[in-house]
Image: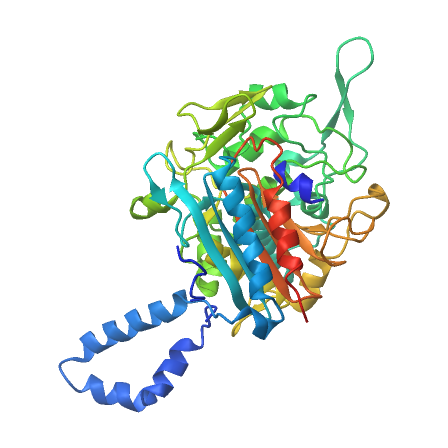
Amino acid sequence: MRRALQLAAVSRARAVPLYNPSASQELLTASGGSRMIVAIGRRAGYQLLVCLFISTFAVVAQELPSAKPESVGLSSERLERIASKVQQEIDQKRIAGAVTLVARHGKVAWFKSQGALDREANKPMRADALFRICSMTKPITSLAVMMLYEEGKFLLEDPISKYLPEFKNPKVLVKPATGEPYTIPAAREITIRDLLTHTSGLTYNWNEDLGERYKAANVAHGLLPYDGTIEDNVKRLAGVPLLFSPGTRWEYGLSIDVLGRLVEVVSAMPLDQFFRTRIFEPLGMKDTYFFPPENKLDRLAVAYTYYPEKGLQRFPDTPITEGPTSYSADYPYRGPKKLFSGGGGLSSTAADYLRFCQLMLQGGKFGNVRLLSRKSVELMSHDQLGKISADQAFGLGFGIEGVKTPLRELGSIGEFNWGGFFYTAFSIDPKEDMIVIFLAQLHPTGELMLDRQVHELAYQSIVD
């Protein structure tokens, strides 16, 4: 499963509490509570003190709880193997830099930035670097869908055409051995569950059967500047035939982008606004955006390519074309900035993404904030493919390890995970109460296995 993921500033950072919305109350209590605020309010300095209080709370909200590795059952010495391996790949010029993070029992035991944020400018990698997380956007969109599901907005078995009528009466492409391709009616309509599990019949722009049709219809995949909204894109996608009838196969594709549009329609707000107000702000994810603001772009890690015959090179200023599709690395800061791609558009940091992972690990609750019920998290991290795939397990937004086939590397049965196009990955392990995050910026990767090795090196550090 982990190989499918790629389809799609301190020595050991002073592990600097996961954002706790109750921190403001705790800070008030520690300072004398509401009585102090009332007393201050009678003085001319009231506004200044309130500003200072807000600033102090903002700092509290940004911190991450840390622990010595041994206090959470990990070996400091063994965790250092992560740094050694990452540095080896940097020295061999396979990657420019990376950020790695391991958290267990709700505390950060390992958080390290290595190499360069911008190799050519000699800018070192920083712990708060922004990365194009691409398909690691998908689990966040899936969370948004399940939040609305829990509010009674729809059922997972509802046809998507009930909310997006452009998907009514879908057609399936047939390519005979001889003669021209033609379409036939799909056996049934696409459901919301089909979209969450990638069994909808939708694919990606690089598919050899439908890629050219996606290109002709101006369907966006999210990795290029695009002059259109998510509504525009989804309507164009709905006009292209499906690869197969819904519910019959697993195919990684634009299903989650469609769900991003569903979130907009059902919630009556743009996807970026829903993410910000319903997810990012409650979790304290202050550095996660579709389009990062100008004052944070200096923290966006440079993307690189690796070709065996050329070595590690800065991603070109022009898009790379592979078959029927092209992709770039400048989409977070160039172009109209109108497409909120729920399948691949976000940029984020290791600290921010940890907050999301911790929410899922803790059954939908983070500090005093609950965004989802424990039962929904159980459903999302439970295999939904069944007989559709004999060897692959996939839930509602996540790949799942060790369910259909034995574990091939270190890990746990039931561990859920995913990754991103520009070489990012995460895993959430309920059994070990552990999170592993790996962030780099590389595509193509030249078959580099560093993301997997960081994961295994995190697991070999478990000593309890």
